[in-house]
Length: 431
Image (tube, rainbow, N blue to C red; front, side):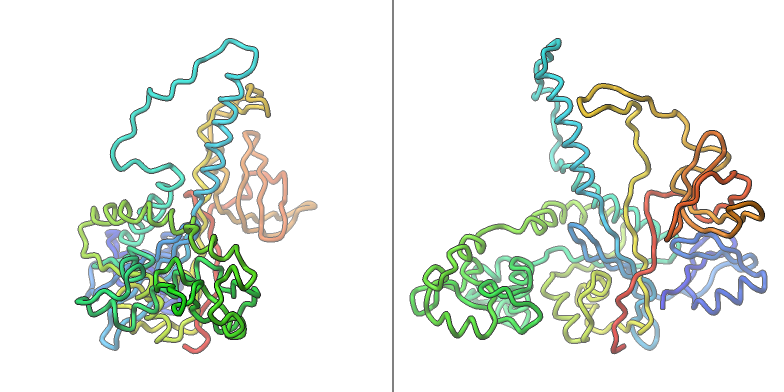
């Protein structure tokens, strides 16, 4: 299960504790709740403690990044906390595209013409699009938070999804790992990602898939990854030494040469992320996607983002995960909108945003508990707050939205920090 983060009386991080121990400390008055997400307590009369090595492990993804915290105890390596961070790169891209379309639309109307100026912005070396940089910033933010609440000593990062040199030229000699057991995992993981984990000929899923040559070796086909695909055993036997075109699937050859969009996003940000993590001045263990899958396979863990993070690098070969471990699902939603004027569908201003965000100690996005003692809305509600200047707030729970509750009934639980939280599933059934 997820461990509880602990701070001493000076707000310095200690080793995380068991939830049962945290309940005892809170009930006896020796500790207080410091933060709800991730759940953190602060001790009132304790300072310093013995520390064990703690490693934050990261499995970057274009849409969702897995994060795991692994502690080294005398009995071995244990996963003490895990989360899945969902990025908002696509929404950032859509917002920038909408703004650009409105700006260009205004220029093309029968109004005063503003000539396009495309040469007045110089991009620095290493510049990345905002939609890509948001992924780096999200991971950086959460590594900082985990270092604030735990005595982190090491980092681990899956730097590359696939070992491309081993895939393009597998017959290369002189390097042992390229002809060892990991090579098959590099190629297979790449093909599974590219072809959607299904047979390219009949589309069947959830069956054993075989690596198949689009142009067979008996007809001069190579082992290059652009000539490989995935097929079920039945289709592989029926195809024989025919090419994919002769077998009635000409689109397969074209699909094999198409690059992965998600892999391209990861490839564009991987070195920037590595450079960012180096600024924390901690040792960084690097791994590949093939190594991650190999570690997960030998431990018989299911395929999830947070378990991939647990298995990153050589240290991920033997990590114990509790059978009732529930990761924290984290979704990046942003910290508000800095656009001061709302526009209509033609790009003309229609309303002005309020200059103030906080009313009566609350802002939209805060988590709060509401206790209404009388009236039609009597009850206890927990959810997200939507504020109004009048002091009549709304609260959105997991099932409904209750409108028009006076701010006096609201008690803050968690301040808005740009992320939504919920408990996830995915603990290994065998553990």
